[in-house]
Image (cartoon, rainbow, N blue to C red; front, top):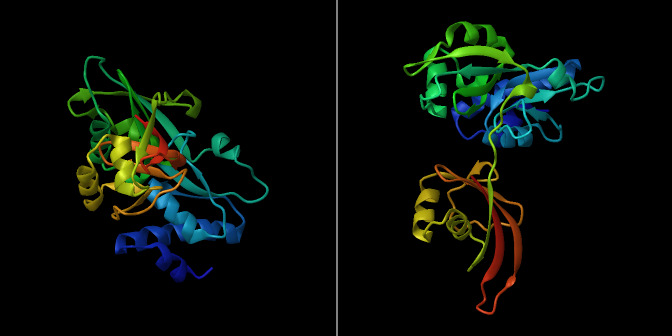
Length: 260
């Protein structure tokens, strides 16, 4: 594989080039040596582009839980299977407990971690609940976090390592929406699924706040198809699960699942 050509195929900025060069070196280097190889945590967008960069390789993505959005990219040689990711996981899980009446958010915990010098790429998903927050991180920084992550904002924290199976995952609520649209354009589907006027949906798309299948999309007229996933910053995500026929008024019947 030609490293520079592979990176040029997906990189959209200098920051991307640096990131994907590191990913390429880790995964391709591991394949050449036939040893396990792992990256730092990647965002959904970075995972999609990594798949494109490393094609026709089929790297594995693992975030500590099936529904995790942020995940590390892994190469496993033939003599290992995916069970080793849990048994000898490069990912660890931590539970932070705090006073129940204090209200903390994802931003509070991420800000607290950044405040003690932790890089975003070393932290996976963060799940905040009542009186506790479970989160994934690279095992290599676990001792430092346990010793130094003492508070989020003004709230004191008690930290302990937990097993990956003990992580309390948030309950996912899915709302099914049946509607008709004039076309399968992105602005029409986003407007229907998120309950927005078409103009507002167009504004979000133009502002770069909408992604299709985890890649940013600024084209309001992009045509979608069954199975496409749309996410909008501040509104959540949806999947266009079914495209039906046309109605008597020449509109298209659709079914959307919105995740809340």
